[in-house]
Structure formats: C-alpha cells, structure tokens
Length: 114
Length: 113
Image (tube, rainbow over all chains, first blue to last red):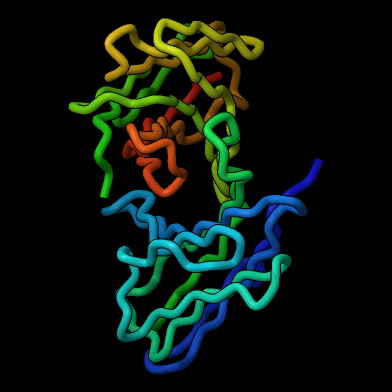
C-alpha cells in the first residue's frame, strides 16, 4: 500500500527553537496539504500545494510558519521561532487533485514545545 | 475550525451493538467522506460518497450521501473492540477543489467488550 510518510513522528523542543517537519507524498499525487490537529480546534488546514506551487496558505500564521515543496517527493513545514501554542499533531496529506480522489494522510508529527 | 456539524461527539457502546453517527452542513456538498483515526495515527479513509442518495457499504460500515446534499450518516453494525477510534466526516464544497474540504469535529467511539 502506498503511504504518505512523515518525519519525525515526535518532536519535543524548547520555545524559540526552529522546527522542521517533512512529508513524502504518495508517488504520483500532485496535491499536498498540511493540517494541524488539536483537541480544541480539530483538523485545521494550514497550507495546500498543487504541482508543488503553494495555492492556499491562508490558515498558516505567516510570521512564523513557512511551507515549501523543494521537489515532488518532499514537502516541508517549518516553524521559526516555535511557541508553546504550536504544540499539536501536524498531518500531511496528498491526493490526485480530482473530484473522485480523496486525500490520504500520513501518521503525523506530534510536536511539543516547552 | 470545523464547518460541519458532526454528532454525537462521543459514544460508549457494548460490543455487538450497532452505531450511527451523522454530519450536517448548512451548504451543499459535492462529496462526503468518512475517515477513521486510530490513536497515534493519521485519518484513514473508510468510505467516499460522490452522488446524492448514494448508499455505500464497506464490510460492516454503511454510509449514505443525503438527498439534500447537506448531510451524511455512517452506520457500523455489530461493533467490535477494534472499531474504537475517532470517526471524522469530511466534505468537498461546491468548488470541487481539495482545499475546499472541511472536517467535522469527530465522533469518539468506545466499545466495551
């Protein structure tokens, strides 16, 4: 089974440190999404790429978050500087970008900022 | 935050019982999806629905796309302990774009053996 791969699975860091999360989408998928999951807010869309181009990052705090796709096999989400309120599980999902093609999620990166 | 109303928030049932959960929206959706999330993992797609009125089964799971296109339900028959998890509904709005996909807040299911 093809899967979305995320690394690291867990990250504990101190406030102010830079955090980089990585995602390898399913081969052939041309859309990549970053979601943040918290108990209070559920699944929130942070950013969306199609064919490696950022199409929507309106859900992302721009002052500290950045998302990129250096190539078709790698998407990154960076937080600099990190804050305790960034503690959450960050999911990457990929899809074919078509109506009949649902998103497939990775297993997430659990981030704890102390 | 969520733009779909998913209920119930949580359910505690006995093994063998049937389960029903639903999602509603104030706007029309073109697709409805049901995902299940196990602890420590990402959501996994269970059932995808693409036409109003569509009724689809996946083993003991059955989901329907409401005729009004503003709701969907998921039923689980004869629950077993491994059904434990959080079930999310998701829908694509009128634009057909994946970035228009919205999630419900989830239904946390606990199954007592």
